[in-house]
Amino acid sequence: MKKIFRILIVLNWATAIAGAIVYVTTRGSLPVELTPYLENRRRLGVTQFERAILWIEIVLFIVSVVDSIGLFHFRRWARTLLVPLYVIATLLLPTNAVYIQTGWTRMLLSISTVIGGMIIAMVFFSPLAEVFDRGPDAEQIVGPERG
Picture 1 (cartoon, rainbow, N blue to C red):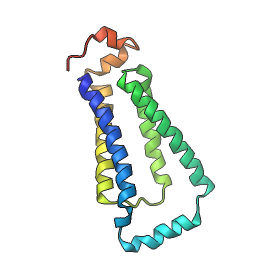
Picture 2 (cartoon, helix red, strand yellow):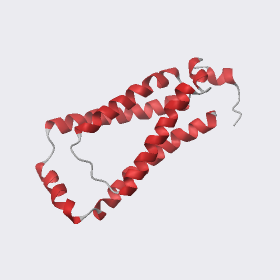
Picture 3 (cartoon, helix red, strand yellow):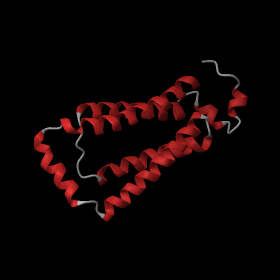
């Protein structure tokens, strides 16, 4: 089960990164009707509010990377940090007026979200939760990985 959990952590990041790459590469395939809107937004520039949100998202991204590393190593603090990270990320969603993305981008980001839900479920509602309860030496207590 530990191996599956670690694979899910890697898949979560892989699908999120793939979604970002697909977003950038498929923007040109959006309908031409959206081009004036996107150009207008670009021309208006970034407001102070948007700049503040960007910095919050950058910090959130860095903390998420650190949290994923902690989860990978079954650290209790990483489990404690997991839900607040998802709550903050969810609360930031309405700060962007409009999301314009292709179906491929939406698919990859949706898969990443589903995998994130699987990670939360495994951390709190599976036998794996006991590994986090044992503290930082859990790897030695549990013993070698059994697949």
